[in-house]
Length: 383
Image (cartoon, rainbow, N blue to C red; front, top):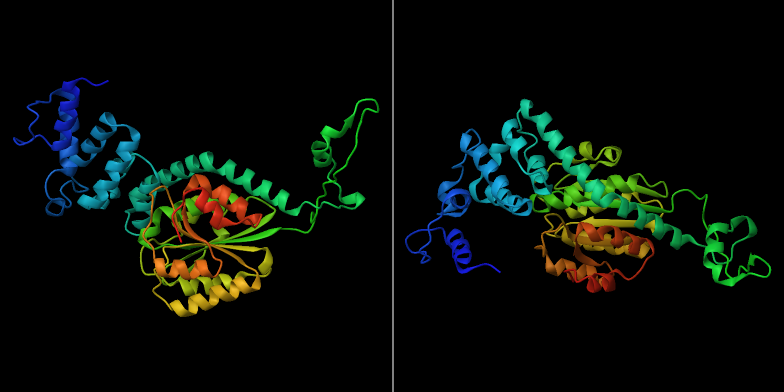
């Protein structure tokens, strides 16, 4: 348990340490350096100090080094994100030596992607290395769970309880009937047969990720690209990835390289959801075997009435549609609640989802489980 002096020191750093802080505490050494790092970002009127640590200023690199030295990684990531927003420090990413000093996370990747058209040529290689490093870490953390969830769901969704002899999955059949083993005969009585079902038919599901790439959806774009690339590696599904603002870009051909995929996005701009859904509609060949994951805050800048009609027609044809209001760790998103309610009334679930839960979401969608109930059970926000 912290003693009184330690508590007062913490309050001294929180309050900023002017004459009115009331703690009567003086900081020295590392504690003083921590306080200076916090003061550079949070003290005073941020709007009057925008760019105060500008990209060419050597204080930027020193400040980044200080926060990495004195604060844990999770706090450093928050402080970097706050620096972008409060001080307008995006320009500091245009220098490779500064970029090397940054704590690398999904927010930094999103910011780099939004600046990719203005990053100087001498910084582009460094920016790409940063993106690749974060992508590899996300794939390591999330990729295997995605593969296991999707493959497991596909296997369960196509099992045939009454298979013909050449359709029997003997491995699974023995596994589920082990309790019927007869020692005296040294055999298993297969009371329940498990078949391969539609094995050999080709892909079992068509999955379309349709992603809003407006600025507010930046981290969702990063996570979606990772998951899209992972799903594209699973032979039993066909994966398309479509991004949109007021235009639509099909990035499916880039799914084999998530870094190229991310650099193919163009964060920012307006939103025409109807145009994007119209394009996705043109990709659908097997409505009843298609899952359309629409990732957007539902603030439609195009034809809202036409969008509602189009979504209704897709549902009537058998397409399973899921609307994710955000795919990120950032908590409750802002979204058009009226349109979300309209979609929900058409049996189109609307909720946000954290990256760790996305594999489970897709597994439930493949098995056509009740996603509204699932989202409530997981305490996810939505209509």
